Image (tube, rainbow, N blue to C red; front, side, top):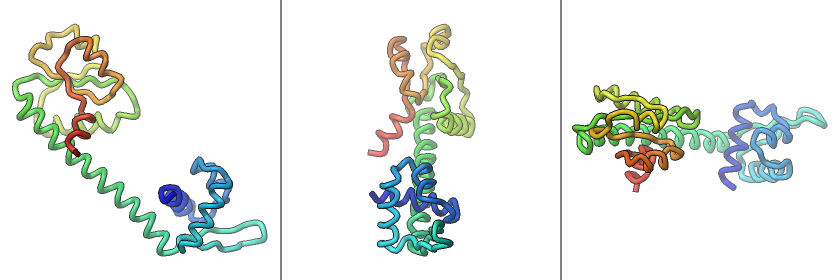
Length: 182
């Protein structure tokens, strides 16, 4: 419930309060009834004030308390993102310098917008470490090259079976990041 309230507050903030309940429902993906209940809870908790502009139009105003909730969500996101980037830097250094110091790094990067940021971060980290690497778009491309002294870094789980079937030493970067958190 708290996440839903935060989502509604964020939309109100983004739209400057000039948003109808129908707009909030559309932008949040919540039902109109759910939006109505969430707005009532926001008012009860002192997160939102409702200003009547006319008999048919209202404006939703974030209170300082509501603004604090939205700001905290943003701060949490920034901190989590920083931690992920920092952990990725450490992981890439560990993998290239300690775990696979004498292996050629191959990157298997299947085009997928969902993982574009991961690719950008991996590439940046490898470049910062002055690490040479080859880029492949499919596991079949890798099979065609001499890879005995190579390790493949990937992050798209759709590629796991292809790599397993080729019997290629590989590291799922996202999986390793998650393990490292525990």
